[in-house]
Length: 442
Ligand code: AMX
Image (cartoon, rainbow, N blue to C red):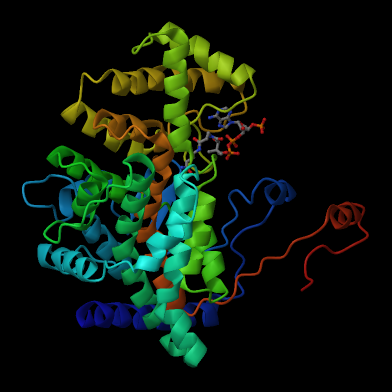
């Protein structure tokens, strides 16, 4: 681990010094203005966070340290015989800021294998929940139970110097990422496979081993997991799961507490739960229409019915993106390569042709194009992972890579407690009447 921590520390010291200089010289510069409507509309477009790991452009989509998804697919190390990137390599890129060599990605793989032991009390805690509990509830409960292992919490209680926070957070990050696939697979096998669990395979990479523990031995499913874990890992800092992890971490809550909080945000239907909603919605459409391959006219009618019922079309729209999500494109390419004739996957592609013009015609939807969640479930169903309530857990395991790498940076750069100002409606009204200054306060 020394090589990785040394490299990270050297990068962080350099950037820390640069940030200090920037703030000293330019700290008073104004970067933009905030409209009243933005305060009421979920703070859209207000730049208020610094996140190293990735950057989202409304047209271009996500770039991880400057690299697009197709570039990552080309440049990141692969598993032997595979063609999808190893998530270990992307984690290295997000953390260190450089593309890893095959050896560096392998180093992380080995490290996570060695640290993947999950203590028994975690499984016992999950077992205390009824089987009916949602997989995300079981997953987050497992993470909370694992918090007993936090080295940050222990060291902080003993008296940890501010300059050493980053290292304890770094250790927790590596331990937590290493253990998440085991907890997630445990939840899956407990809820859907009669509690028949599968031991980890120490020879496999992080995502390959996850696929194995879930119970899928098909090599192309392993490839799907590598792709899935890569494309879901980060979406810059303002999305609910990333922002929550960052916010809770800013209180010096340890990475287990901060990540569990982020996962509770991911569990919302407007965020990470959308992937289960998409498949549920398609299954309901197929049942109602009594066909496995509804035609475009039937899909159009069903979409209109969904909207008329006051519901959103799941998997479509985005708070930042204004074009088809490149993560959707990457999955479509995977589908065309591995399962071009699958009826469910073809339905996803037909929906893609039908939905955007309908949403556009409403005149209020800012982005009528599909997001990542519009596609992921259909690929999983193809391989037999049909239990759609589990999908957000997969998303969560992947999201750990980005938000925890970011948390390491937060502590290495010494970011303080986050505390934006809020106002009441009374104050807004007084301000509009020219009677009160709304800015300031504690
Ligand atoms: N279907 C129907 N209506 C939609 C819509 C959709 N897919 N997307 C947006 N709208 C509606 C909004 O509900 C809003 O209506 P209102 O003014 O009556 O309240 C209006 O269009 C304007 O919304 P917006 O500015 O375009 O979107 P937003 O930034 O407020 O919300 C999002 C973004 C993702 C929550 C929204 O597009 C949505 O609900 N999509 C469906 C759920 C989904 O796929 N979520 C996953 C997002 C990706 C992720 O985090 N995993």
